[in-house]
Length: 59
Image (tube, rainbow, N blue to C red):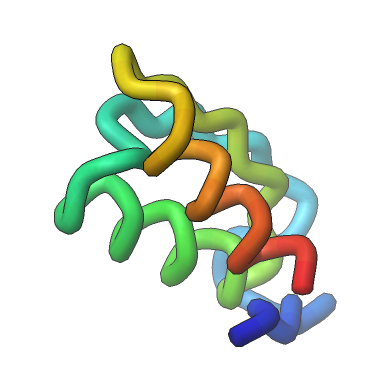
């Protein structure tokens, strides 16, 4: 599931730093922020789940 970014989103042009992107709450937040047009920088202690979040955003 790729995230469709909205250029007119509430977070368009913003950079958001989100921790815990490998977990359920951090993942949901990262995907929602990206959907609103933000550039997302995500961190997590576990690489594989965080990588899956990045792949979901990239398509």
